[in-house]
Image (cartoon, rainbow, N blue to C red):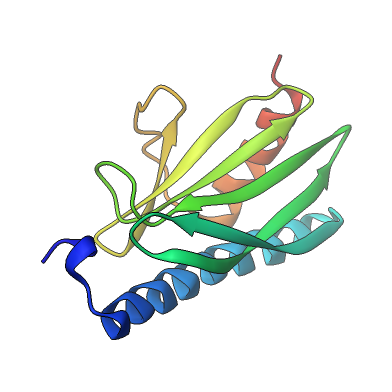
Length: 135
């Protein structure tokens, strides 16, 4: 069944499952940031997807060294995956994608090359520093 054929109940269940997956990933990123001593500001973002309508997900602003890391959900319905969250560094404007496939988060470069590292505190910490500092 395609997402456009979902009943309102099925649509609500997909949104709820996606919100839970995003919240779990954001909770990890927030906990790992706090363990690094990085200040975190958490906000809510209203997302809109054609097949799902409007829903709310968390968004993180993390102060890393001399920059900021934005951890931003993109959406559930993305090509080749079951959801995407972007990690964007500032001032570098570099990005890494956190793609969800088969219930597991996988990291990809902005040019879709698999990063081949698990979504762990160590990987997150290294990426955060590199994304902010990269020029």
